[in-house]
Amino acid sequence: MKGSNLLTVLILLGLVAGAIFGQTVLYGSMGENPDAHWTKQAGDLFLIRPLFLLIIPLVFVSVVVGMTSIGDPSKLGVVGGSTLAYYLVTMLIACIIGAVLVTTFRPGDLPADTAARLVGEADASFARATDIAPNIKEAQEEGLGGAWMSILRQLVPRNIVDEMAKGRTLGVIAFALLFGLALAAGGEKTRIVVELFEGLFDAIMRLVMWVIWLCPIGVFLLVAWTVGKIGLRELVGPLAKYIIVVLSGLAIHGLIVLPTVLFMFTRRNPFRYMWQMRRALMTAFGTDSSAATLPVTIESAEGEGECSRKAANFVLPLGATVNMDGTALYEAVAVVFLFQLYGIDLSFGELVIVVITATLAAVGAAGIPSAGVVTMIIVITAVNTVLRGQGAAESELLPVAAIGVILGVDRIVDMCRTTVNVWGDAVGAKIITKLAPD
Image (cartoon, rainbow, N blue to C red; front, side):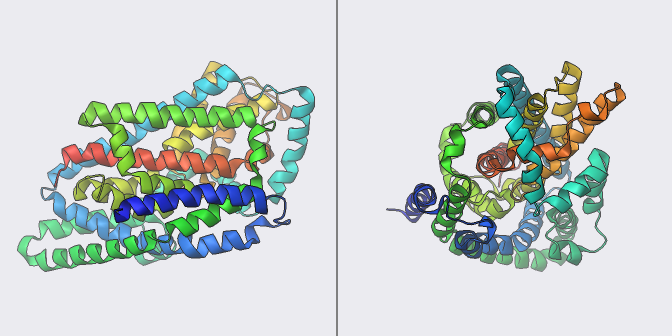
């Protein structure tokens, strides 16, 4: 068996075995602080930390190499513009799909006693979410305008070393783009530096391959922890219809919309390409982080995915930062679901606000677990502002603590939307390969 096929089998076994172990052994026995459980700590040590260790050096070196390999700097405008257009259009489509599904099937229309119980438990669940509380407060204070200003500030960093230390990939990408262009413009004078970066990139990708072989163990531990923390029975509980709507939307976008877009632009079999990207998709599902998956995504895209180095090294790092199809769809569904649950009907105009705001907020969602929950606050705040402007009383607005209703099952939904995020990035890299082949 080829090494890549063996690794695929091992990761798949890790996913299945982790779910079984989590449900049969861990569920109900993880105590009051599941985040301190040994499976979470070991999964972080075996997979998340090694992958995050590689992100910043990989992003910096890969973007520099991508820029120097493009050759003609004028091509960057075509590649960059096409990439951003692809990101925005696919995220907008994902949001529309989510909004249509949630307004059609109305998962928030639950029996009165069930809805009252969920609403009553929301405050307690929200109060326990101490890990995301500071980010939630910041999102409330900044709003959509503040989030976009934060992105713009990251694009023009004061100190690139500080940006690297804080793991802010957007500033690193911006600096790497300029540095790569400067090297390309230097011609023979900077050729030796270009060769240095090509050597560094080769070395980092070897490190990535070594870490990838830890994926089966890490995926097993993280999936076991997730299922042990939540339990599969939540899939048939009062939030089952909500989960089904989210997963259905993700399936439509990931299995119909994105493959159709890929086929339209490349005339290649999209599902063959999906199979080629299988390790990245399974790693995204297990780690629940598009940023952590980035090293695997780049390796799979350039290797089995047959994407050009130019496209992969530019599109994928940028996509892991700003392209969040799954997150955009999820935010549209989750926000409308919560308004339904609290008995607040949204008009068509307010649904348009949800779609637009969720699309823009998803751009600012970090490639880390549960980032979509934090940016969801921006969407809720935007809709509440519109309702307040129409004369709605404070009691008729959706409280921020309402997200406590869905926090309990967010990890399972997050694993699926992260997979769609990574798949959207991979499709973009394949499409841009037509514009920037090696």
